[in-house]
Length: 140
Length: 494
Image 1 (tube, rainbow over the protein chains, first blue to last red):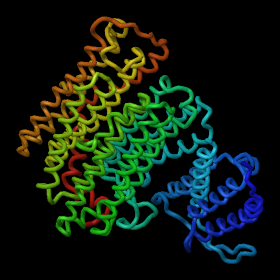
Image 2: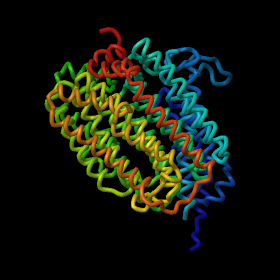
Image 3: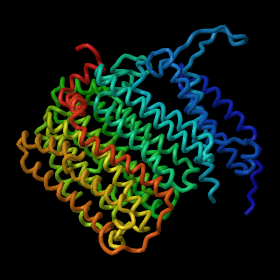
Image 4: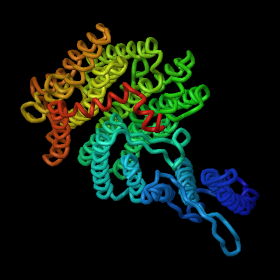
């Protein structure tokens, strides 16, 4: 049966970017307010799942040629490398560091090593979620 | 290097993540895994001697003060277990080179093993009860991968059972930790111990103790919660079975030993009595299973259950010889179960069946295999001076000292059953009329046999050199006998 999904596809093209930008916002909001890499990653993944629903697996893999297993591995490495930085300073594992910087346009901001770790978490969450969904979805 | 105690967890984790990047390069997968495990083994040796020289190593992650952050604690018991887990994983990986087929190798077999070792080492090292749950999940998720990898019909059927049981027990674990937290208000294991002693272990804590026994009993296969284990463990290929049999149940056993010596020490008349009765029932159930089957895998798997009973009987006595004996026996069992599984793997590969009645006469074609198996079998049964003897002797001595004559007699009788069950394999497989076998090519045979011999050799050395190991073992049992050492190392002062 050929379904008519013009409305779904058209809205998805718009909505996907809103979801993606919102997930980035949530990711950066994470340190001091609710949010973070885990939720941000889930939101991004849900955006991609929406694409999968509106189009099909093949279109989406052509549009986003990402190997999600590699993404997971990179995320894990980023997270562990950030946490392991503390080993070189001989302080307990996972000890974080931060400072305030004057950035152009953004003004005074705190830059935090926990954010690097959170980026790793974000990549792992997107990678794992998409690996699961793709391998279940591809199996029809 | 205050982070040293984390290295046995971090090294496998780091390299497992790297291995995810190129799953199809089998050669690189193999040798990176092997190198990683050698490195981990080396670091663990360094850690062992540091713990021996400087006492318990403890660190609280993220520089938070102790009861609030997640503490990682490496005492002698945990470092010995980490060492033997890493060793057994190294040898199983070596054996896998010749055993595991190409497809499994290129679908994350080696990363799966390394992630599992991360979880196992983490569960042995952690000093935080919720973090222990997290590490249990890490090792369980990897074990889900390993049990289902290959997708044979029996594996799919058994992995559903396995996952279901473990998901339920994990849920129960969280519920139990939540109970404990709502009563005690802390998750740090040293702090829990202090707080329970402060409130003098009211009835509700005893209820939680029994819940913990159920949770860990499901993982560690004690009576009557072992029902899922024999058929699930028989499904995956032999190297995976060897890892599961040698390590996963031991994590449950370790968790019971830790919680019952550190937390729930004030109502021993109830909790430890219950533990002892269940341990004896576990031994009886395991003995029946070990004698009932003609399937070599099943026989050795039921021997795991017997060993769990023996170790927990030792732990329930709460006196020095019994606790030292159970540490001795725990490590002996990790080594010897690994060795036996590897050896029966070779027998199954040669005869093409795991049914004893269809085997025979292997002693003519593979004499060294036969004698190696016999040594391993004697070691398992605890014939002096092999490795099972010292542990069992101390456990029985402790049982007599605590006036548990009948329990100790059960332990002694179980040795005979164990001996009979493994000698049956020897008699059926190696004696009798030779049946037609498929000769393994000599390179494959060597690749399987040498790791197994090395492991049997290590277990023999472990038995013969036990005198030399006593200082390590007594350090391990002292921490269990006197929780204040552990508490002081984590919380400092006091």
